[in-house]
View 1 (cartoon, rainbow, N blue to C red):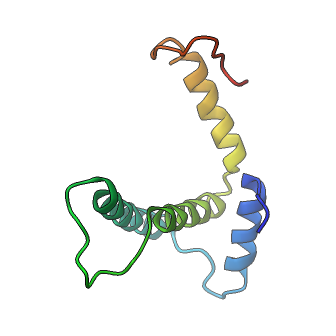
View 2: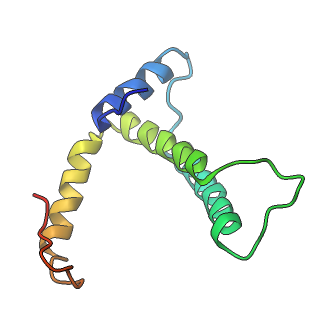
Length: 114
């Protein structure tokens, strides 16, 4: 599978969801799903990087899989609210590059990516 832009990812998810009569869940239901997926991601991170090893009876999921689940639900939420994730990311990056530009210690020779 080729690398996709955020817009292409939003289109792929929309094409997938559009084939079902139910369509997108309500924003509140998707927020609940996003919260559920965040919990699953936290569990995987704790298994891989924390002090809680996985039980032998637990499914073999990965951090990558759980991030993918979160990304899918996040795209669904954005699509249902007609939010362009490219625009949302541009907005938040502008905020970080202006408001927070001097908050952290920069590496030598590093500049912002505008």
